[in-house]
Image (cartoon, rainbow, N blue to C red):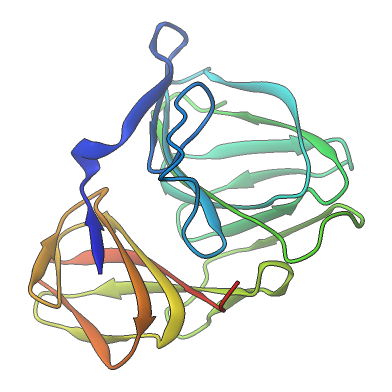
Length: 218
């Protein structure tokens, strides 16, 4: 198990434009050849947008983009005609496939924080697609078969235990609160990269929200 702390993230974005980004993997101008991916995950970005700030239309291809809003509201528009508002508890996925363009903005008058995770598909190409699941429940895993991955959302009370899925690769990201995982205490923005996970469990030290990716071997 490889634990990466929030303080180790590379800071990007454009603070002058109201955009603060914190990258867990090699990203954009920050190139780290030893930190390109873990399993299917190639990016896990914490994004903070001030009211009125956002990312203007830009392209993506050959990437599964999954977004989780922590607080605030995210406005999404893409070149396939989708326009939605993503709120806390919603899972949004944009399968960019052979190519798509999109806009992400904070059109509200309150700050926006979201986690965006990029996964590499098993096969390149195909047609872009979009999906949003409103208010996903803890007991409902979200499958991204294009990347051989499954997302589990865990909301823990203090002292509550939850099983960590067995898997060739498991990526655990703490959204809020504190959890204990195999002797490690993880706080907001911390992550654990686990290879050949088996019979593990996480415990809420405080009330906590955790995103867990279960991934097949690549």
